[in-house]
Amino acid sequence: MNQLIEHHSRKAARILDSARELVVDHGVRKVTVSEIAHAAGVGKGTVYLYWAAKEDLILGLFARELLTFLDEIIARITADPATVLPRRLAPMLVGTGLRLPLASRLKHGDTDLMRVLTQQAADLDVFARVRPSALCDAVMPILRRNGLIRHDRPLSEQSYAMHAVLTGFGTAMSDPVNAPLGVADPGAVLADTVARLLEPPAAPDEEAVAAAAADTVAVFGQSRDAVLGLIARSQVTGQ
Image: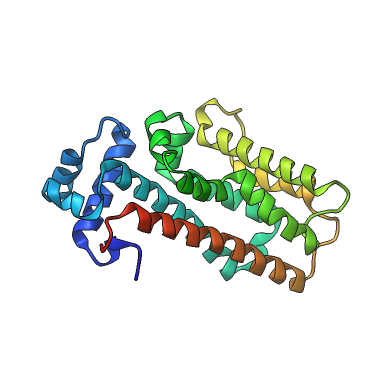
């Protein structure tokens, strides 16, 4: 069964859309189930047909953002395996992540959202899979094994460097007002930084790129399955 209830319930879809808009605008604590129901044009009891509590609804919202992120990454690498090259992968990861409004609230210190997301150990395990550090730990060995990154430094140091670059650029690009002036395309700067930091002098052949892309898609696919499981857990059984 499709875990995304909004695909077969227009009411659930409206509830999710309304909850997302209200939480992004006002934060988790200030939004009530009654307000979400009113904005969605349904009764308060209808919300509880799909989610047992507001916290479950918020958890499902955030998980859906992660699903959107993972689906886009998987689709783009599948359509063009060369996207897995570090100079292209890094800007894609950061740029896609910056388009997630709830993740942006979390990054800017929404402690109420953080509280909701950290209540259950099983949920923490899922979120840990999509942290930049976890993605580096999972993907960097694939890139190295297929010759997409150099072998002149320990893999652990390369993974640490990639994590630092992703988080640093993500922070700077999410707050352009306070970033240094004069850079028209931060994504291009990120691509050049990663290429100089990690890529070998000679470009890998198409077979190596295709193998790395397939294995990378598999890693993101495993994370996607975990996120779908979280979404299913967040909903009322039978919905």
